[in-house]
Length: 278
Ligand SMILES: C[S@@+](CC[C@H](N)C(=O)[O-])C[C@H]1O[C@@H](n2cnc3c(N)ncnc32)[C@H](O)[C@@H]1O
Image 1 (cartoon, rainbow, N blue to C red):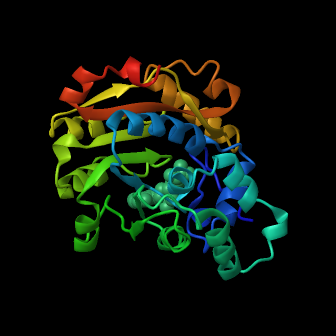
Image 2: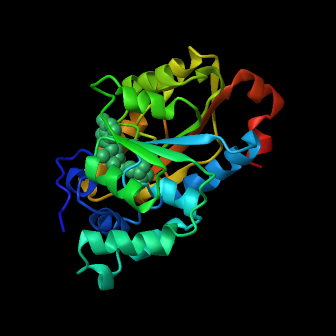
């Protein structure tokens, strides 16, 4: 198991993002009580109900298709975590695990719910698509590169964009490039879960260029515990410098995230935020 290296900043998990299968990801993060995909997808489910129909979803920084797995198979996050951290599965090859996952989780996947994914990690995206957690996926880094023609064509019909644990890695360039390839960027919804050390303002401003309005949901979501004191110290400083009181959250040892809903101004007028998440 790789140990995250830290230098006072956020722990470096790059090796668990690029392993051939999700076991190191879930096992390492379970030790830190990682939990945001589960709670975030509960809120995304509410947004989907408010939107009506079956909008096509694009999950940014999708990793091993965690959000896709929850949304397409109905498997709770805790169950996915226990599965991948199960010592009884530790000796399986990646091929054996993939086959088993396909049978266990995706034999009755909700095909009508389209969840596509983007992540910089090719092995993670490949695993998610192979098992069926994602309908389609692309390993691209839109922070530095233009989107491929395949990505642009594949995600054009997106109605809802989701992002958990990704902002900080992803910023305005990715969001601008994704919005730029959509057929109807003026009508897309976004649900973004953002650690309180980061600002969502610039991404919200990019969305505003398409007439999309961003509102912050009340409350915060726990993401995970800090890996060490260095992470906690730098996060508390960053949160304070943004004018946020860390008491009860970061001061208690937790990374916590704000939730933002971005949608067309007409939808904001028709369905006030409070009525969606009451
Ligand atoms: C903390 S994980 C979040 C994964 C998942 N959404 C979740 O909630 O558990 C961050 C992800 O961002 C991805 N990532 C980092 N930089 C990226 C970039 N420039 N473009 C796309 N994905 C990136 C990593 O590969 C990793 O899968």
